[in-house]
Length: 608
Image 1 (cartoon, helix red, strand yellow):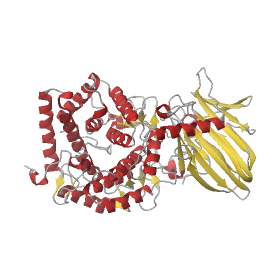
Image 2 (cartoon, helix red, strand yellow):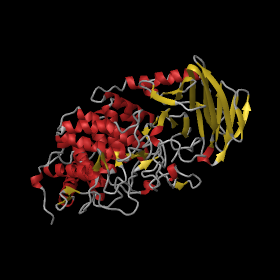
Image 3 (spheres, helix red, strand yellow):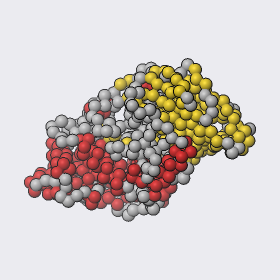
Image 4 (tube, helix red, strand yellow):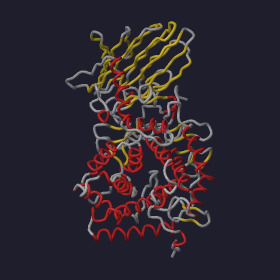
């Protein structure tokens, strides 16, 4: 097993990238240039891939928390000799406040050590390894700065305690007494930039980051149920936003496994159009209208003017298309789970749900869009609707991104219906009268196909594929996008069967045989039961799910229903999005969106 479990990490962010710090005081992940850039600390994926620890020399008991309403971490180490606190933060630009938080961040990791009582012996071990642990650094002391350089990156470490460097690493043993403070700052810059790595006063940097995060949260208030959990998740989403473009990455890490020792280890440091609608719902529900508009503007730029090529499903944080996957064979992987990958070949897939995500998001935020629509937005929405008219009949990889073969996934067909339904609602804002009639006809055709071929009489549920025989939690989207009411007899039967056969201890697996509970599916179940009116059950289930997070309120992608261990990339935006939307749904009408476009089930067509 690794030195630290996935859930034994805290998340730091600066609007460009993220760092993960474990509860012992070791920074085990940091890609300082941007989320998807090479790491300089990668011990999360290999013991020898680089880390930076500041911890008591002897055994300690730790308690940690974020400073209220921030992503600034405070870890208290209690030892036999005394007590010491370590504050960790990624620096923000000076006076960055509100919507400017994350812009022009200096790429500086700050660590402050405060003696609280006694005299605590401490040890620092700093070993950067560049290019995902491939390259050892040259260390060069220049005055009070310890420079590390290799390949395309350089780091500058400043410290109030003497450092000893040898063999590409630095060490320090020092004692911190009550009232004493020591500090460390680590700045990053590309190897050949004219400007050196930035330097900030550590105390000022922590104070500025604290004020910056609080200012952001103050203008994105949420007054609904489970306010503290929602606000924490909103901060996490903002921390996972690449602020120059406004894009929200799926996770801060790559290759943390869905199953220990397994090979489903993917790079999630990219942006999926599939997640787009749910992301915007979460941002909107936390009063983030500025982020909503940035997200939509980013997607329009990333997609560009679509032609006949398949609609792209995912992008780099600046809108890159080519995300070709590579294996890092020199890394052992988390808990021996290989391969370790960078890039993600899902970018090549056809996923016909994407237009539904985009048009659904556009309809959701229609009051924020100009009227008439900007020409590029109008063109994008019209083209996506037109493509759906043609492509809804095609098989695809589905939202779980199957890599074996394409199928007629029910959730993809439902999102095709969503695309066409929302296009019809937009009407002549995005097309001609003839366009709207064509979209309406195709929408009705998709609906008939789903109702005729998506239901399996022998199972008594809607299945994962048309004419399928297997349950799949993705069908929980049907009431959430308004295809059917959650209380409709067949939909209700499907929800109950998913609870009975795919759920264990409140965690919903995607399919039978899925090794762990998928958190977004579990929150979808909360949403469906809320729409069905099962309020008492929903509240218990939601509270049980929230308790699955770590003691900082952070969630990975999945949770083992038996051990409770978090699995998959971390923190996972989809899980936090699910929490926000499920919590907000608890405060909304039980009717919710479940009745949007719904039809009585006694009108279901028969299979020909």
